Length: 188
Image (tube, rainbow, N blue to C red):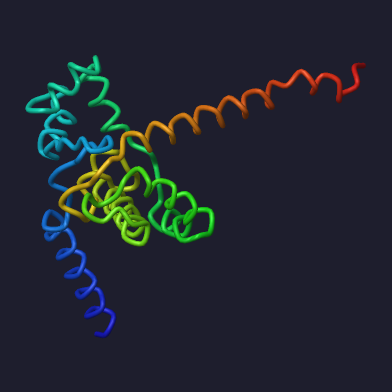
């Protein structure tokens, strides 16, 4: 009897979580570059993800930046397989906290860009996104699962993060293809 009641309570809690999801999800994405701030409706991003066609201000942004809407749609829908429990444990580890701290400089609630608020919001967006994507995550469901009405993306911070990632990638490639490896291994 107790197990049956526990299962019912878990089912009700899960149902409430999913039904209230839209009440606590992002409605807009604000692109911020210094004093410049322009918002894009999440519904327009979702339309792009579903149809491969842009509308509203998002259409203008894609034209100005010469981005292919279909490629952006594919990017928004690209699923990354993630297990909920493993991801949760990783995000709560020291490495996960450090990574979330760096991401929080790029993605944060628009009115409160503090790490103490941004990190839990990103963590919740990832967890909610995994639940929405069923066993993985994609960018669209991360945005939909982000628990603040306006998710800000700091464009200069994003640019710096991408540059760092590219330089780290180049460094890894250099050392993995290092000509010094040939010197270490004796030739037979």
